[in-house]
Length: 240
Image 1 (cartoon, rainbow, N blue to C red):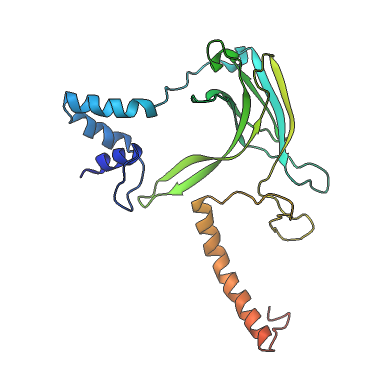
Image 2 (image 1 turned 90 degrees about the vertical axis):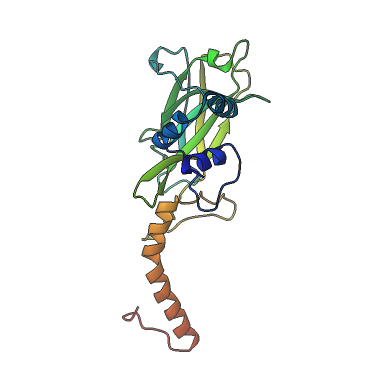
């Protein structure tokens, strides 16, 4: 079975052989599609039409009539107060019940964690006022065997706003997001997860592999020291 066909079946929800990457190569799929007959093309189009979202039109956001703003910070404060969460992707959506949500706009948080998204309330649909919701994303990088790096966006949080918002402005205020927080009381970077807090998100696969390679030798040394301690031969500070 051609690779493009297996990947297309995977996208449509059918099972494929284990180990096959669930990614559609555009050039490969185009060549395969060109070789189909008219009836086969129509059949494929009917299966795909519900899964394809129309491309978002490029427009000058400064002319849009409404705006939503706010500030994103870490869940835990630092010694000087709230710590801004910068360069996080923020999307604004209109929540809908029973139908796909409507995308309204996007931006990235600034150095101080602040963001502002201009949008058109008409994008919520005819006769519908937007039910605002913010969604936060971080990039994920997957390293392929052929050397390519595939970037995707992982949702790391959200914040619901008002329903049927008819105003031209809305301020979400300061939003606290559980993220990669570090203990300010230690000289070395140490992840901080308080008992009443929320554990952080998972590392991207590429970053996790790099960390494992870096930490594995240190972990072996630590276990050797623990074993010596149990045997009553604790290492000296100089040996450590």
